[in-house]
Image (tube, rainbow, N blue to C red; front, side, top):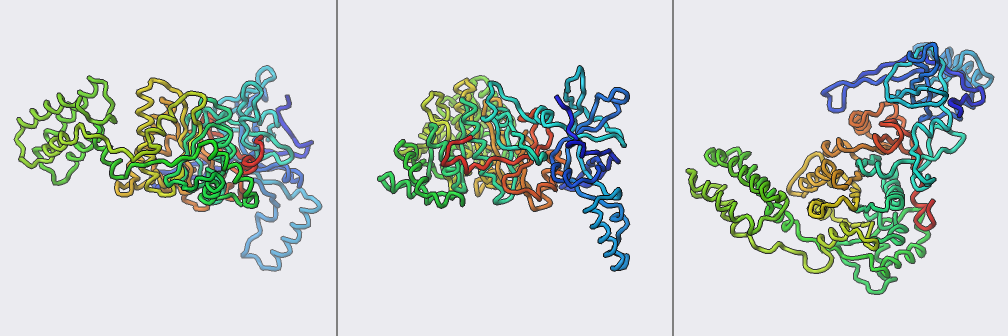
Length: 602
């Protein structure tokens, strides 16, 4: 195996210095320091064409002195041509002198000169390559390279070994999501471990039009094929996924849900209305008839249904009729600024009795309070009766009203396919059960309510089943609508944000996972962001968003600035689990999902 590639003798470079840059974090509360390598390579136009950002390089370090078997691995963030005269060229000089200098510099680019070189900026990956017995091994160590040492490009084989996941059974195509950038003259397939990618939660951050839903649809399609026990639930507030994974919805057991019924009984007319309700990719707008034919297959297969949702008020009421809701109400009494002090003294004891009751009886906090709570309520009534409280004390009113509603039947949506039916199908492990669910939710408030209710129901079902199967991935399109930084009860964001936070904090142990897709990371719940182990980043025009991503996910500033030059389909990915190495930025160009919708996928 060749370890290095010198581009036929054209790439000759040495490390000039390690440059440190310190700046404040996005919140202004701390500072962060980035160290980048500044490398000088001999100027050659072919080198400029063949080497791009994302290319991996090896620089000898102190551990390899005398043996030449230890190298620090760096990743190129930027490169550009330099001329010695450019260093002294200044706008304070007369215009005629500047023009003459620039003319001379331009001429030397064409004929070559010893005064020219390629300036390369590279960032550390945190890995060292150790050569033992003629074989390379990558170790996670941060060892400084030697200034003045020769810099080498890693070969194609070593790049694949360093970054790409190698699936078992020669199934590379099932795990390939695109091709690596950084090597201009050849394609290196980029394979990721889809099971670990989704198991440890994912974030996709990019500006409008950069291809978030395109990438999401691509990975969903690949994951459903590669992971037989995985199910995917998509909260589609932009009405995109009913078309962007249409082939998958037709070929796999699936369910497409609308909150407003499609009234037409004829399958062609129903397909026409389905088409009108979705955003159609521009590249497919001229293939309308082909799409209609595929959509018709969904209706003939009885895959499209109306989802009957309870009202927001009913969802809120049901939340407070559980043991967890009761504890939340009691906690609120402690936080009341003008609440009676005498009442606050007894609240902790009441809460302790409730928690003890739940523990003794093996009852979950999310369980609806029913007749089984009668002994507990009698015990609490006795405790409150002994206390010296006013007749209209809030704690007395709470338990009086609780007795009134115990035994009342939970409000159900009127007929049709309900949230409980959806939960049952998600939990169904039989081969014919739906594996992909697209929930079309154009009303954002309804989406938030359903998000909170469905996640709660699935958690409850998982705990009752005592089974880790199936794996379920929840995809939150336009995640800023579900997990905003500022949460409010009035618009339902408090409930949806808490539900998603719970999913990402505790879901993995139940094989429940999250995929967050958004254009405004600066306005998201930071507790959710901290749970993500893999991130896809494309163009983010706002400097604050780029800086926040850099701070939150420990991505070098130089890499984040490079994303401003991305074309559609270009992504910067870092992952702690899905690639062969941890938290190494990977530049890649993703496959175009639209190529799969009406043709057989790769």
